[in-house]
Image 1 (cartoon, rainbow, N blue to C red):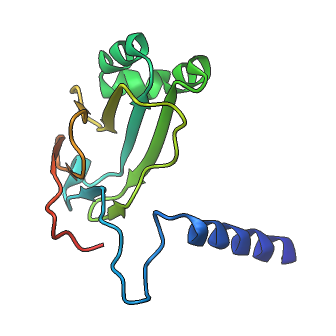
Image 2: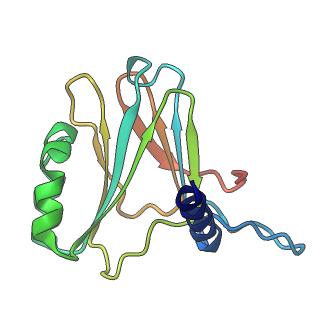
Length: 158
């Protein structure tokens, strides 16, 4: 029991130390959000949606990853991550319908990305992939049969 409490305390402390989760309370403002993912109430036929934001730091690997549909990506991601050794970074979530997340930053990635791609695992066939290159703050909307990506409005509350 003590070990579990210690583990939870350490995890919470790690989250508090992460700048993406920190709130400024000394009269300042929260850092601007850079990514919001919202799962509509009807998302994926009312089933959870797995979402991966993939940053790739190699042109050939980016073309390979960018040619995959979501089903192919989720089937091959462990192998691709293993063989890419530092040239790929994956941030993953699984959202239930009606859930949303707002991030102020993605996890650190030592390499400079040449491509950023988002994949969403839906229960129905489709590409379910979009390139995020050239976009800064993003609003990803998970709908019933697919997702959209748009610029995040500047007045988005954290």
